[in-house]
Image 1 (cartoon, helix red, strand yellow):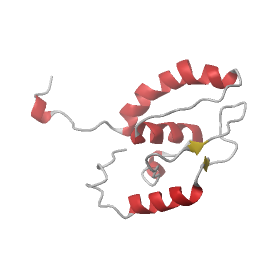
Image 2 (cartoon, one colour; image 1 turned 180 degrees about the horizontal axis):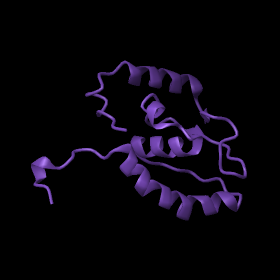
Image 3 (cartoon, helix red, strand yellow; image 1 turned 45 degrees about the horizontal axis):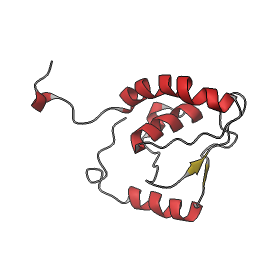
Image 4 (spheres, one colour; image 1 turned 135 degrees about the vertical axis):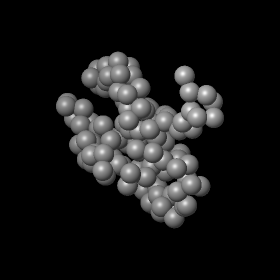
Length: 116
């Protein structure tokens, strides 16, 4: 009911998680439990919410997670749907490292002003 100029211009990570997790359990988990290899492609904040959930990253630490755009990240999940290795594996770890460093060197306003 807010006027357009008073509406938030971004969605918090909590809001993203509230939308993501039902979809994760309804659409992605069944494929994983059936032994499938599932490809998830999404926006950065949605991927951050998924990684936060998979790795049980606390709220006070999630702001330090940088996921570079367009860098495939592979997670092998155990039967409990938790990662066998935290942090996953980038298909090109050197390029991912460079991209993460570039993100960290950006002005937060230029990086889209992530919200947690």
